Length: 168
Image (cartoon, rainbow, N blue to C red):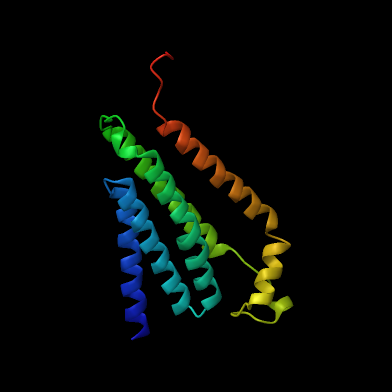
């Protein structure tokens, strides 16, 4: 029963992730991203890690995606100029995405996230161990990621801002 539930939630999550990419509206894409993150949180629950599931919902679905929806609605991207479709760019982008995904999966399959002999818990990581790791070893990567998110929001604002008539 658990395997069927895991498979169903996995298929739902993949379908919502595809809806993020193929949605015509940026708002629909952001809402599909929220459903994708809820699907990931459900997968975390099925794996037995309720803490990561709650972090997934609170931080990503609750804060970051809501910020993206706010930026998209603030900029009103739907009034932008129409772009001509570029099929070659789509093929190159799709191929690059698949290659990056395969590289990421290969790396994650061979990665060791923590030393089981030192911690004594091969399959369990409680909140104390996780919070200690986040605020010591992985603090710098999370700060860099927050700067990337800030740069992304600024770049979206600059790219979506209409050009002034006086400037050429």
